[in-house]
Image (cartoon, rainbow, N blue to C red):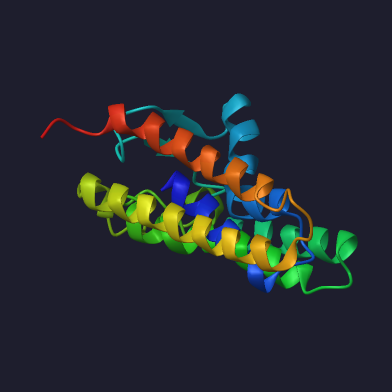
Length: 187
């Protein structure tokens, strides 16, 4: 659920008006942003597959403890740069939300402890097995987030260009959705 993570960040703009939209877009993806360098270093792995069937070896960044550590880092970033708001709490919550959402959609590939220390059972409820349902949820999340952002911008942004941010974010969602369509399995 890639689009859904972004959508959750955008949907929080109303409760986080002092945080820039770019950090709200990135915060739910902090786990993946930490994941990419580890893939490049060969510590974690990724193989592209059909929608919902990528092969992930993310036993550090996507472990429960790893997600908590990354959320703590997000909290620190929020407090350092956005002290006048609840920036730290909001960014930490958005960052950790990635783990919660992934718990529902991932196959059993999420560790509790980093590196699956202790060889504990891997977590994941496997909703990716219902590709079209998850895709529909992601599209719905993107639409709802875009509507929330439009409503916030229209009420809070002064001037004739209030629509620029929501238009760019909506276009971003449309591009992500269009990119996922060819990855869906044939009906």
